[in-house]
Length: 118
Image (cartoon, rainbow, N blue to C red; front, side, top):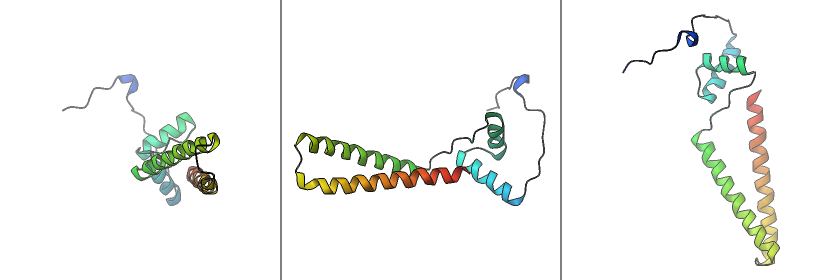
């Protein structure tokens, strides 16, 4: 199967060469890999949008987020039952501790994601 034809206006004909330090190259490689892009496409996206391309989540990260979402849904349901009086009151300290732990995990994940962007 042949590659599809590209319009002349969309063809990339101009080549620009730059020199990077070993550390700079390492950073570009890491960012590109995390975004699922080649280094050239990552640099192109960064230059022309002014933003870092969104990193793709690993399957492990996606499963962690899904599990955290399930925990959050369960906490919301339990809180609703407690507030309506359908839930035993002696479970309230446990629910509050779980809520505190969930907030701590979410904050750690948020700050971890931000530290990778710099």
